[in-house]
Image: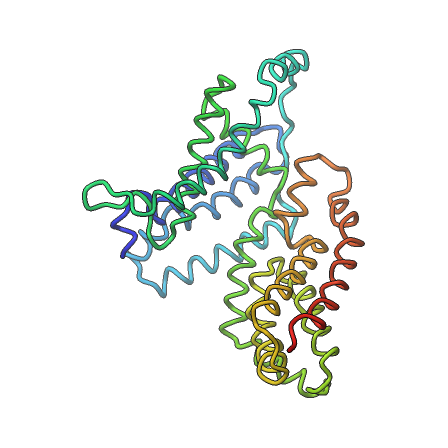
Length: 331
């Protein structure tokens, strides 16, 4: 089934992301309070360009030229972030009294748009998969959850506008303020997901298997369990994503040594292995959406405060996972 046969296709989602990024770039360009407004605007323009015009470039220029252009754009994005050329504008002064009145008027209803996103996403994923209008599916059949999430976000935007009386343009302006506060870290999940694909294509798991064979006795079950668990945590810290670390470490350690040689039960083994990866997520700034974004939202002075608080818990859980795996997954 092609995404063309659906109303909410993956291409439409990409175009929406690109349009929002372009609006953010335009608002950043016009923000005179931002001392680095031009480089900040260029950063978000480059990010949105590939989403908005990627298909057009493929059709006009072909894959090889398009991939080279996008590669140069990625390098420029990295250079702008690395050179610290992204700035934050000064928000306009707020009427604190009006803000308090608005909060009292809305009360807990203010949380409804945020709660609506997961609820609508789950409902659409479960019950709207086969929903069709003529010969067209409502949701992209190959990217069902992402299409449902897109509708949920748009619905939450309309609900928030209805509750607060604000316009969708106000939501874009506030999004731009939040995007400026988070900065380049907002792009980390996408970049790290692509990096995970690179590691898999480079057969990094086979290299890890070779290294383990050189230094660890294949019959030392405890050592293999510890290396797999700690390796999942460390590689997740590097990648910022346990899903990216999982195929590499599982192919390199869990499958050849623990499952094939030690006859471990695969289901609890990989489940606990993923949990070890999540321990690494708690300890790295690379997991920006978990650790850096909350610090920005809470306006903490130390952007690494969330990580510092989570490290003792993460290490304790990692130690428990090693023991659980050692005692539970083997016959």
